[in-house]
Image (cartoon, rainbow, N blue to C red):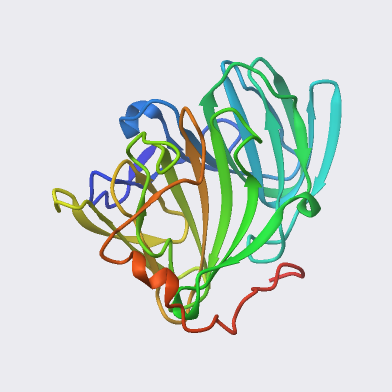
Length: 289
């Protein structure tokens, strides 16, 4: 049964479908729902002992193991992924598949999985991305410091990009506010984007402002544990509620995936005026939490 939760904004997606197929719950964003051309996003919770069969079809696909333990079989290869206890307890395993591949996933312990997909030609090979192959970056300064784990950077996929971002309690993220909705390389490229949230503790929340220069769009979304927010246009900064660390998984897609973006010109100056860095970063990326 589909349950719609508090869709307060045309830019927010919060759809849970209970007991669908092999998954206990599912969040799904399609290009049709989002009104864009490329990016699909899904999250599932699978249970120990399940065996899930799927295919990439005409898309490239990246599966990010948020938590749990699985084995993936695809393209004649078998990858065992003994993942973290939660998104706050380590770096991720991820599996990249180009179009035209089937896969079988065996679940060894309850597993949260997130998928990003986009149409592609099949120029790249299937591969496992291990936690050691991801890179960690500390970005920003003072109370706008955050930690970024890079999963798919430009060149790692045809249309997809993927990162995990950790924002300590009370800090700002995706700051200074930036946009990527105009195709004007190398200064800015048009990218569709999803923010998928987790909180520590999970009763927390974050605020995400969505706005354009002319304020034709000027909205604030309250994001809770397990929510996803669609970024179609405009600037989209985030702030974490004090007392709660905020994680979000970003999937982005476009014809020329790049990190090139346009800062809000009224706030771009803060890049040159960071006053130190947060003493709460880096966040722990090992151990059970």
